[in-house]
Image 1 (cartoon, rainbow, N blue to C red):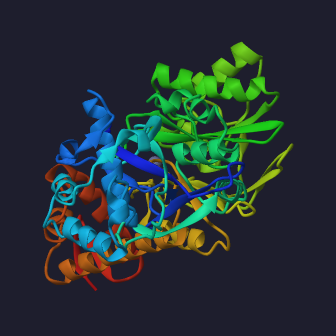
Image 2: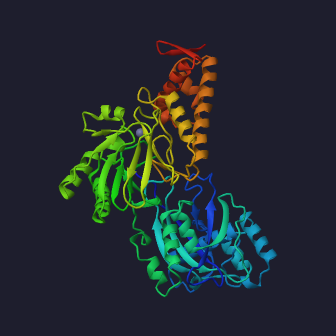
Image 3: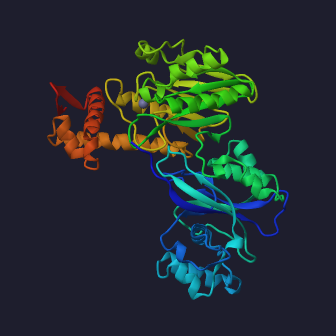
Amino acid sequence: MSSVQPKDAAAVILLRQKTDPDNPEVFWVKRSPKLVFLGGFYAFPGGQAEPADPEAPIENCGDDRERAAMISCAAREMFEETGVLLARGSKTLTVGQRSSLLDDLESGRMPWPEMLEHYGLHLDANDFTFVGRWVTPPFAPRRFDTWFFLVNCPPKQEPHVTGDAELASGEWISACDAYKKWERNEILAAPPVLHTLKVLAGGLTNDLVERFLSVPEAHRQVTQRMEFRQNYICFPVRTPTKPPATHTNAYLIYTSRELLIIDPGSPYEEEQRALAECADDLIAEGRIVREIVLTHVHPDHVAGVSALNEHLQSKHALRVPVAAHRLTAESLKHQFAVDRHIEDNEVISLDGEPAIRMQALFTPGHARGHLCFYDEARGVLISGDNVVGFGSVLIDPADGNMSEYLDSLRRMRSLPNVTVLLPGHGPAVANPYDKIDQYIEHRLEREANILTAVREGASTPAEIVARVYTDVNPKALPMAERAVLAHMEKLVTDGLVKSASGSYRPV
Ligand SMILES: [Zn+2]
């Protein structure tokens, strides 16, 4: 299965009027925690291009139609999300006039280009400084090819989040303060946002634009190396995993002296090479690889273990031990040796700066020997396949067990300080407790519906699927039957259903 194609998008990095050039203030927004894509993340106002964007009147853009269209997209999104109108001629508009314009635009009474023309406004490309074009890596449910523009906030305009359902809040913040919030593990932001904050924290220097454009990612080069939380590199590799996911996240957790690699899962050579190079870079800075650690047995999490170990051995003469839960080790014994068993509640400590302590949590249900890893100090929970960034989690008996899975979710839910989930698939999850609650509620709702179906006479898995999984794509029906079996096991254990030779009846 191929990954999602990126869609054109644009974003505005808005600088405050008369801001301190040594530590400029920028307007950032918090995305609604309910959003599927980067919910709860901090970002800049922006969004996807619309077909009418290229029609907007614009000056000083020459023949560059593509740039003109993206400037128009950026300005429209800025207006819709914050009420700031980045158009020439808007100085004479009163606050009331601007808000009625916004009304016209949002209600669809007047399309954006027509609105600008009607009020004698136009965009000027000189107001929008291009500072990079970033493409979302191919591991997310949505991907964007986003143009970033640096813009000075026009006089007498104040951005405020307009009640757009996508955004929870917005505020001015100095670039240094914002970046420090990330360093203190208080916020989550995507790589281009972190890069922007870091560049701006260096001040509005003469080489500002060059500094923005100094990384290959700012020129559409897709990076696999992302650090949603400091010292935890998320490195998605392409794997033959379960759709809609196309990638499995490996994690490289590092201090100044040590490195731990979780779930090198790709069977593909080029992906294995990319991961090995990332490890090489961290080793070249003076670290040793402490261990390769596995969350669970599934092939899309372990298929790259041997290749990575061979690489580390041939290039660095390192024989890196592999560690996993005993049940995972048992299932893998014909593929490769697991050198060390990780026990429930065991603490894995990495030496160096900053010291990192991760508690292993035995959390079966999706797989027998499943482990999560909890760094309480940083609020990080590596959730493996128990909770994922997008798509759903399959509970497939006998390796999967629904009662155990729900207990594991409840255990994850009971941890005192989780501010981010780093899942086996998809982007980091910024609203961990809500997400885990949704998972639990979803399973209990399915269970209740299945029990009702059995009480109404459905007796085989196929009959139950037909009644309960009415929202499922026909291709997914065989998987739904496996999920029903998992629910039936639990209902039998709970004493609510009796089973006899493949058919079920209520108790
Ligand atoms: Zn799995």
